[in-house]
Length: 51
Image 1 (cartoon, rainbow, N blue to C red):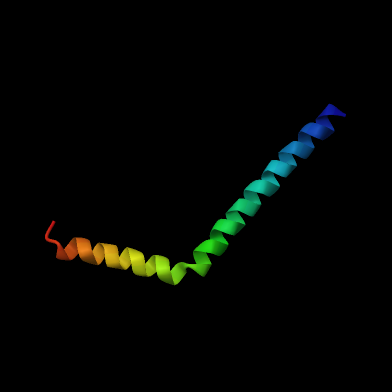
Image 2: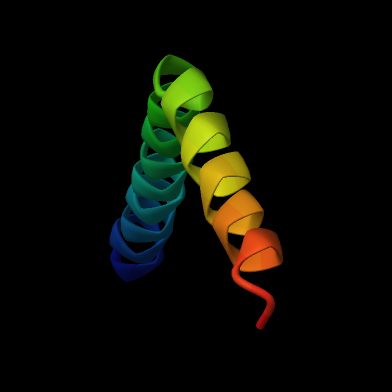
C-alpha cells in the first residue's frame, strides 16, 4: 500500500512539472513579440552607448 502512495505522489509531481513547463511555454509564445522587442531594444541601446 505504501508503494502505491509513493508512486502516486511521484506521478503527481511529474504532472505538476509538466503543467508548469506547459504554462511557461504558453506564456513565452503569447508574449514572444514583446520579449523579442525588449531584447532587441536592450542590445541596441548597449551597442549604441559605446560601452
